[in-house]
Image (cartoon, rainbow, N blue to C red; front, side):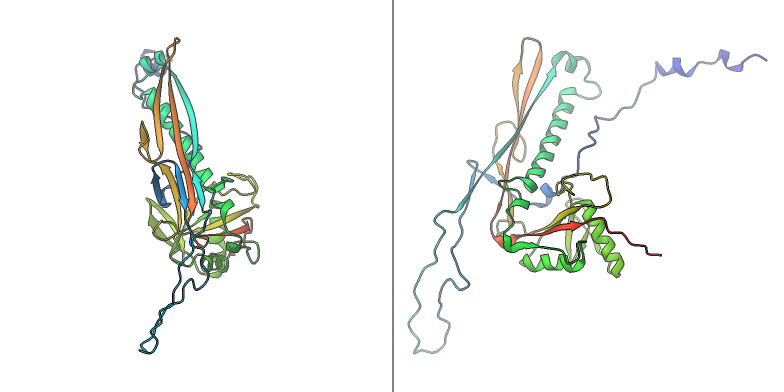
Length: 313
């Protein structure tokens, strides 16, 4: 019997005439970067931010509070300032993107090659920014927690009591917890074990679990055993509790305002020209830092174990 498909257009030939629907380049290492969304930022004029603090005790001034007309002497004094306040200078994160103009001229449909290269580079810079906000030796939140604001877990794993202890350290209107997704999962297991599942809240375009009404924001920039994506089930990490906002004397992000070629907050893209080989060059720069306005704006639960599991059967 003859093959009935001999007189039918074949798949391979038809494939040559078909339009292929494509995606823009997908960068698997990108994250939602929630920290940059929930942290309040302040633009700077000249790249330096000075945190002037009052050198105060528990009672900085004696005051008169009496209805007795005989007490007419109003206490005198003044509030002292720190003479050497801390100054924060913006950190520069930069990269250069090179694109052959022949490639961008010929192969820019349906996606503009220059635009896609710049988009991927910008996302990479923002990933680095979030990592620096957490881990920078100079201004990173994790490295700048006051000793009095450091807490150890009672039993290694993150328990509701431990997060309550953090809240006792940042009790003046705390804004959010910050934790690795593995730490959040470990905390949820502890809540499930005790029958107190956390509620869910929606902020900054995402759904997050919350403890005592405070959202727990995920980030892989709080490493587990020094890794973003640990392979084993166990490991130790840290959980931060943050109060953000200048008006609240909290933690704020810093950026340079009014940059030439500004694309977004603190980020500029500048065209550097085309060389003799037809290669176009672009300089991308992102300027950032963070400041802690008061010690009690930030606390950390250290050495949290994330590998404890339970049999609920």
